[in-house]
Image (cartoon, rainbow, N blue to C red):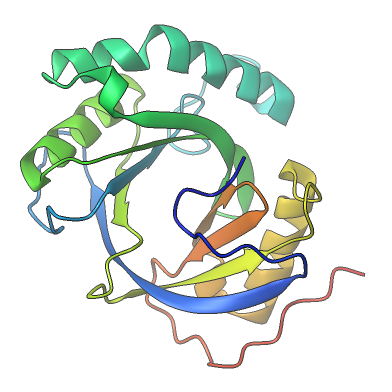
Length: 209
């Protein structure tokens, strides 16, 4: 699927450094940190990778988690959105590989034109229902942001959960700022420097062997 955030496509692996407006929203502890004139992206999980354990969850494969997340997206997420007074048709949500604490999981990514208050309330609701420590709210196209992130573009159709996990581990070993978390959109793996670690300009792309 074509990334919604970056119009320029590339057929070779390369990295770019950017900045984003970023906030970790604790459920029902609403904040007012992002600009309202940029689309907001809410990142969360239906099968938490940390902090909440279900029987046999640790044995579930990525495909199992992705299938379950797809069902949640179909049956539950629209109800949460509607309960917040938002038309689900105005938002786009997809299931993609995402990484946290050096683990790859199926993540849900919801994007839309929401103001600060609406975005925070929706993020809090999603976090509460899905038992998240926090929901990540970001505006990746906002040029005034101060949180750095790196975009790695892969050859077309070569990026999947397995490749993303290998690159996550290699990137963390190369630059600790890349080990906080990532999201995949199509052929792009986006690493958010949520720890605000120093990332050297001109970073070398980790070699996977």
